[in-house]
Image 1: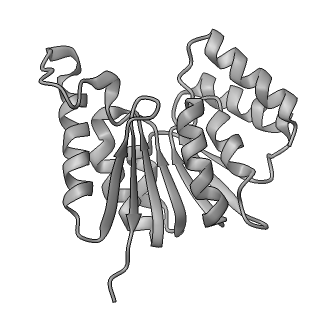
Image 2 (image 1 turned 180 degrees about the vertical axis):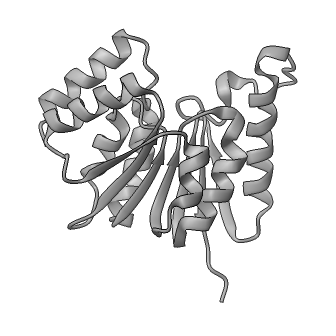
Length: 198
C-alpha cells in the first residue's frame, strides 16, 4: 500500500470538507481489525474511498471489501484513489443507492461499517444483521451526531436524522444477540458485536 498517496488523499478530503473517518475513530476500528483479520468487509458509504483503503490493510489473505456509494463524483474519485494506493484488487464499489443495493447482497461479512445517510441507519442495521457472520462486528460512525443525539435537540432540520440515530442506539443496545458499546470518539462510534448464543 502506498502510504504517501493515502496521506495525500486524506489531506485533499479534509481541504475539500469531504467527510472522512476521523483519526481517533479509525484507531479504535483498527484495533478490532487486527484481531478480527476479516475476510469480507461491507462498507455503506464510500465517499472518496479513504476508510475502505485504510481497512484493506487488515484483510486476511484474498480478503475483499464491498463498498456502496451513490454519488457519481465521489465514485469516480474513490476509484482513482483506490488505484493510486494500489489496492484495487481488494475493493469493489457498488454504484447506486444502498437502500436498493443492500437487499440484493447475499455475501456474509465479518464486519460492516455504516457511514452514510443518518436517516437510514435503522434500515442499514437491519440489512447489516442479515449479512453479518456470527461474531461479526457492526461499526456505525457519527452515531452521536455533533452531540445532538444525547441532548434534547429537536430542531426541525435534523430531527429525522437524530430520531433515527437514537432508534439505532436503542435497537442495538436492546438486541440480546448484540453486545453494543457507544464510544465518544470522533463524532461518536457504535460498536456492536453479534454474539451467538448456543
